Image (cartoon, rainbow, N blue to C red; front, side):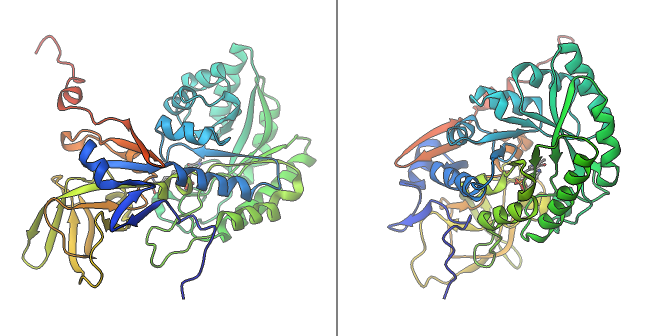
Length: 431
Ligand code: LLP
């Protein structure tokens, strides 16, 4: 019997009703008919549900859940989460501006990132900021200078690199000493001492983030224990440590049939166990777990092509729309929008896009009920690091984003016309 997981992050609001895959109460085929394919679609109910799982998981401690908006940054998504009380974790001037445009107050925005420029720092200081998560000594000096010039004091944490193996894909692990992120924890006391002597900044805490798509809690436990020890040491050195930013990274089930990553509630209990006794305000920065299973990529089969020894399903979505399979060998469940009749025998397909690269392959030998040109399929778990990582490669316009709430839906980013796309080029007058 299947294990019942009532608070599982894999639960979403994309279900079949009368054989038709729906986003909440809206059949995806209806959206496809009105906006065309491919498109991204998000469920408000799933976004909210996942935010609340974290908020509840930390309810025993003073806390702020700062959504890592790099995962999915459409302003309609930000507004949805901000209305629930979410803060935002931003990593660029553009993200800061987007969060502000969506109405998020500066005192709920934390600024992370390994290469903040003086201009980005000034933008955030001017518009209001909860804290900067500083990642290096040179950055700290720039922050000190810019804040002093502006006559303000910037609250900071210092991101430490705990040298912990997150046991995730190498491209998204950040907590080992060979990674570019944070200050080696072994040098932390020295760097905090330096921070205490600089004008324009005030140390308030510690920041750590060890990687993304973690499917085991053990690396978090190791990292947070190190942060707890460091907190005691820094306090003994005379620093006021009142806030701990524990980063993001909790993984989601991508292959639903056989993955069951830890639950936010267990993650919350781990946080309480490792750092709860310190009396600090806790921040976390989840991105993927909030947005990932709240979004689908819906696409249409253009052709079914018979190869030498295999069948290719050629879709109208490509690697420029969803790069995760090409970039991280990521698995996404792919399901038909019209449910196959029970008992239909599945056949293997290589599922590809139209882009001129062999890397434009979403899945090999994937078993699906037989499909034909014109059929719609949906990529699950595409809400995080989907639309935000898309590009116009092969001059394919960015695809629309749609937000569903109950029986309503709205296009939250329209598909540009070819003219809108190509008219952004400017031709030098000497040509
Ligand atoms: N905080 C910081 C400082 C981060 O660098 C990240 C993600 C997060 C929070 C959010 O992590 P999450 O909860 O989403 O795991 N494009 C890759 C993922 C890159 C993650 C980058 N940093 C992918 O598609 O798998």
